[in-house]
Amino acid sequence: LTAGVRPETALATVAGALALRWESEGSFTTIDLLRLDLVTGEGVVYKLGAGPTYLRRDGQLSRITSQSLPAGLQTGAADVSRFRLGAGDLAVLVSDGITDGTEDGWVREQIAAFSTGSPRDLALTLLNHDSPAADDRTAIVLRLEGRAV
Image (tube, rainbow, N blue to C red; front, side, top):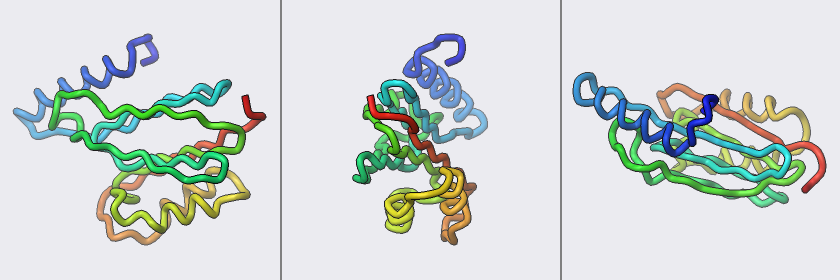
């Protein structure tokens, strides 16, 4: 991506390489890629088998999910979702160690209730919550600051 390769091409390349590796070693991974223009607020999420992404825009919470398999189990295209965020809006990416999206009421409650503090505080709340998932945990919280465009 840093070299200027388009996300669709980069993801297809990674998925293809992991598919070849799957045949010999059984390696696959979920991919959750967020691109966000910090000036316009225009964003896009690319998902390959990844957990849900949550958007809180103007106080309304929405969830972006993936129907695709993880990279390495498929060579098809990633699921792509486009959106726009404004000042104060949130984008929250979590791994399936936080939630796979089926039992995520507590995640949605935490995001909806978040009003003060640093996005880091919300990420730590999500990471430290007791969860039956036995997988690793990742939570990324982005809050767009500034004025709406």
